[in-house]
Length: 161
Image (cartoon, rainbow, N blue to C red):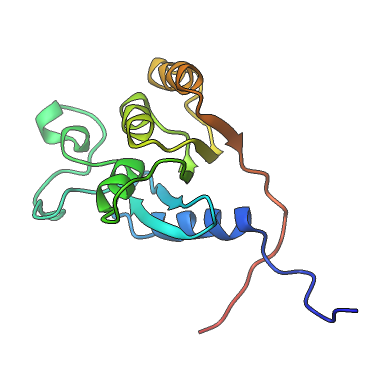
């Protein structure tokens, strides 16, 4: 009989926790999104969060959401999913899983599909009714990418350093 701990984190809790933690690196004042890409045998391959590309100063470029397109964040920021894909340096992501805190937009969906990621586990789907997200779901379905809504366990997590 084993005396091991029974309240350890599941893989889904662990990897979504990593995605949440990655999102906390974002300097976006409105939306912090994190992503974690995992191999079929549950090894972390890459992580990302929404922010500006390397070399683009997040002090000199805008974080606003509205107004002149050249004076808001949308032309300059990179979403967490794309950052995680671009941060990967190990070869192929074929068959990988993506944990992400916000359902992917259509542009990220294209990159996810093209990279060979086969499963997307997402937390929030707050933009589900917007065309970009409807398009994402259509593309994922057409490409055979499995979509799984993350199920919160209600577990209280605390730690100290």
